[in-house]
Length: 309
Image (cartoon, helix red, strand yellow):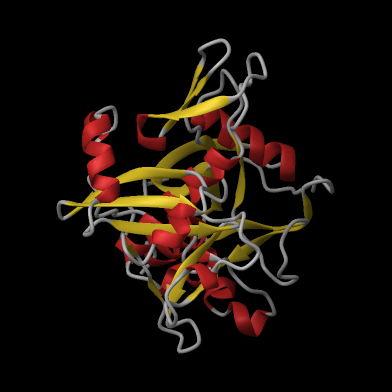
């Protein structure tokens, strides 16, 4: 099976930020950047991002000026330096302690919404920055205590690391690798309907987390066999997608089926089927739906369809 290249970048990639990791330990620089009137703040409230234009179907990210974000910062939630955008410092701040964060903001500055619901409508750079802020703030709010000794942790590296005040252990944001794969058998591909899908008609690619001591290709073969009983041979890398919902990176593959009979693991899937290209192109008439347009799952499917054109 030929490798199928990625046709275009995935959602949540293409960040315009220079992460300036070499400046995070410069306390003078960080303090000045946080206090600078021109600095920009991305607020996160209970995993939701601040946007405007939602009702019009044209969402855009809202980055607050330092002055507009004063009340949010004074609320004392976790914050972190994300990087520079065109030389301007950009920070994330979590305001989840507020029952209603909108009174902390100037009137008319938008509302908080789930990024995943609208990411396909956002400019790529904006979706990437909001995802970055969401993922880092999720980690900050859930790692206040040391996993080694249970001591209280304090932020380091401009909010991009935590250090235990008791044993001195350092903790860094983790990203869990997950493989996601479209299994192909000639003119057909294998899609499953997960027990976790909120959409009762959606069929998508198979996916699963990489286990310790396992290569990505081995994870592809194991996950496909565990969920569907289908044996997989070659697995070709396609692309990756940050998925900080809350803390993963999706590593996409097209994989070649060596067997065809399906045996569904009911703990993971309600159903799995082989679909032809024609069925997928006409999926609405066939009575099923595909993954969201912002997902790498959709990209794997679409690029496979286009490879036959």
